[in-house]
Length: 136
Image 1 (cartoon, rainbow, N blue to C red):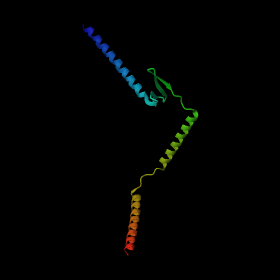
Image 2: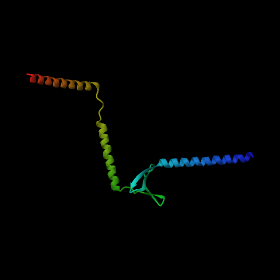
Image 3: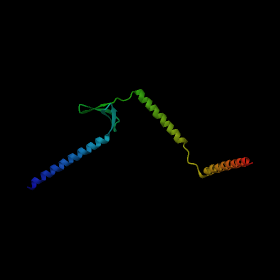
Image 4: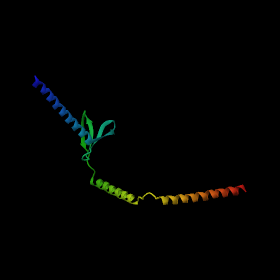
């Protein structure tokens, strides 16, 4: 009788291992692809992006069966244009990073405040002078 009870436990353990392995495979599959829903005149369609190799497929449902067909890659001219644009943007970014200044030090801020104070004093002096002229 004892021997009879061991087999169901082993079978249960084996079944659990298979279920966990399948779940792990499904999770890995879900992390590999990104699905983007498309709006195609009410028909269900998706873009499937393979995050490992960058392949893109268009998936549609035909007679309750989903079919995915790969989308052809860009022409070499389009690819070259994209690579040129990327190079231009990288050069622009490098230039912006090179021009970027350190924050001003305290003496530069003091100079700016002194200049602002002089401007304000002069402006209010002019307003006072105008008020005096208008009162006369």
